[in-house]
Image (cartoon, rainbow, N blue to C red):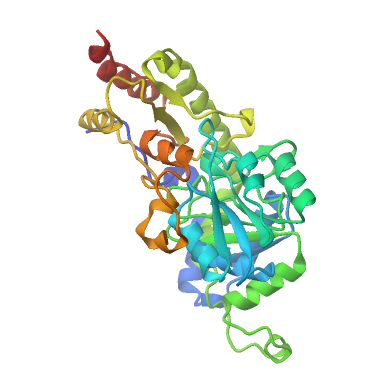
Length: 381
């Protein structure tokens, strides 16, 4: 039996509040269905936690991105700048609007969008930057806002992996016109299934997204006499669970940062062997949805060999985004080729996600790092 794992979410016992059972039972046995106020309560609470005003819950992240972008007035003929190393769901959300995603490379040290490359990619039809806060760290708000101001662009945040992250005095979800967060199992704030939320300070955007979510048209007649209710809204059961867990999120994020610091300290000697953690430019405001190392070309063993060796010892690791978006068969029509975004391509070959969750203990961190060192050291002797 292994004592190291990469769980889908924090242990449920750590995520519970005293009234959680009663709140869930009220939904299950009270026949509240879509009339429950649990989604509205959570939408408001989470939006305020993000230093925003309005929240609109949805069940699928792709819908949240697509409807959010549409509510911001983006669609056919518009270009949206997107980092090449994002999840396919993000790209699908952009494509569903009819807008054209223009991919840009990422920074190798942080895996965040390269804002210098982003500026060079701005063209006459560019309308927005989709800023992805990767692995728990925000893209620089000051640089984003400067770009947006200089070129009259919208900022739309994909903040799935960075709930309550901060940088330069801004909190994730408070920089752009709108932001999307996801709560699927495995997130820092996790539900029991799919669920996501769009936050915004713009009431018009929130109202428009809510109408689109509920399968209503934008005609005055539809607004006055809606015919659908909660078509794609956050399920009451999920919302009740998330509301109960939300107060614990700051503490869990602090635990993740503490664990990341220990990883950093213990992994430092392995830098000479080509094991390099992604760089933290946000200090304690990084919320470490993932702890990611790069197995660089200096490492004497290949990433797959290292991963298999750890797995044999009961230490579970992951490789997310093994192929950047521009090389995915689903997006071949965009016309990109191998070599167009070399940093994203390189990171996809190097990154390895180590165990990371608030319950990780010191002996488990040491065992993980020790196992990495033991797998590498025979190769350098």
